[in-house]
Length: 144
Picture 1 (cartoon, helix red, strand yellow):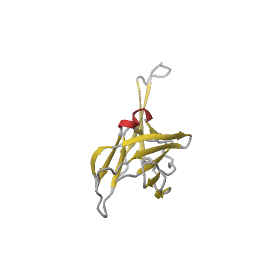
Picture 2: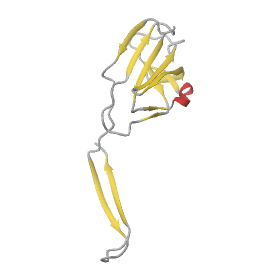
Picture 3: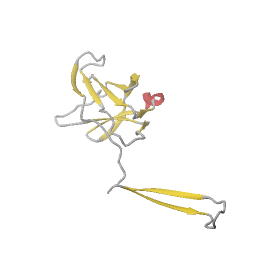
Picture 4: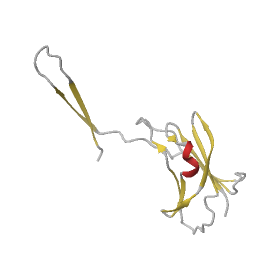
């Protein structure tokens, strides 16, 4: 087959670029089949551009099939703020000379915002003017 895919991962999503060459897999129709070659093309303050070289090699894709590209070693954002969009570019050749299609919007994520928090505290002593320890407990109640 041939071709390539570029995936832009926006910061603050983190990509472990040190293991990137061994952490990419591909799947067809929901079945992860094999490791595929990927590399970091660019890292700048806005994100990471990851290049999947020939992820469709030796694959016969019927009409209606879908391909899954997977990257391990990705760190979710620390904030619940929306993250700018991931972007996907597909090319007809492995040298990225002929753009087939691109998606540059509608692929954003947002970490789950807890619906509620419960709090409690305990103290070692309740005697006036006593030197003591306080423990504050904050528990996130998961969204349903």
